[in-house]
Image (cartoon, rainbow, N blue to C red):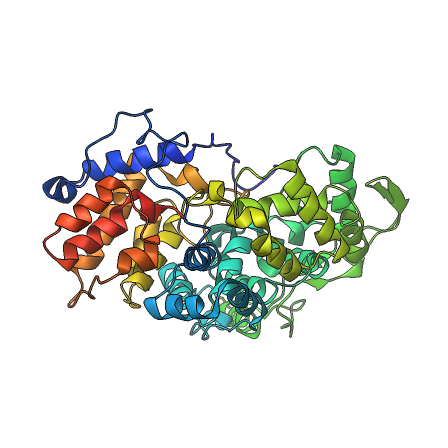
Length: 492
């Protein structure tokens, strides 16, 4: 029996927004610097922080155009610089949606040496992580980067199993970016033949005679259809249908094999030649020959036909829509909301760009109940700090701090991806967030003027406690720390 996944799955119990605020207040109160500032009077755990029914300290401003645009930017990017914010306010909500969705993705600069990675010259993990974080901060197409980050958590792989002695995990990041707003038909095929995925979920070792079930299972359960939508026979027969792929061999990898053989006095590899593609290579003799019953239909399958069969299943559209909504709109979408968007998604032949536009233009996206209803992941939080302070040279520091907060890029904790929303909030995690803000401010030679930062980054909507502290702060450095450490800044 094959292992179900390379990493154990976890089912974290979701917390509500009120608990996030209580947790943030408690953690901040425990930090020496914020104690000295009197940053928070600690609320009693489990109590609401205001007499409002929602248990929050503010009223949604999403009836105002400026707040709508800022809300959009928090959900679709990693936060905005003051200049990006002002341009979007000038453009208005709909024009900003058009620009974010329609602008052609910008490619990041080449990571030196990554294409030629070998056992002797592996990619260094912190350089890979810093390369992507730097592009998150600097990219002229931030929505593309935000979508790349989303797919990175959906179609997961990690550099530990994929191995940095190959360029595969680096190539995967480039592929996810290029396909980020494409259609699900092309996406699933690119994901299936991606060299990093071939290794991560063992499809590269799967043959017709010895099929490996890992990828077949996760393709249906985590990537496209959801739990309970297929049978164990579908897993077994799907593995047969998808078999026959192997990893590509780069020129650098081939030359390294030859050099190692020469050093050991052996002849060079006879059955290995360099490949000219950056995808998996299909070898018919390794595939399954014959028909099998897969998702109710018996025939001889190949990879494309098996993937197209998956996309005929009724569960696909609502599964993907629900995952998208939890990331960008609300973690508790109504059945009617999911059904409406799923129908449009299906009619568009699974066009992701159309889906994202439908999400952002839906009335639910701007509903008062969905204001600050999601929690920033550590990466989102820290990149927003860099953009708010207009300090682009923070990529390496963010990479190091992310590991301590439980989000090392290219290394999700399980095949199901990263935790989501309030699962990120714990006393230790929030303390790490505040420490990062404090260390960043302390390390800056010149701190930008605070001016109207609370309006740009928090819509000018803060709790009475945050407002009192901002108003009584002696200098801009203190005001920035209060803003960046506030519960309001942890939400999006």
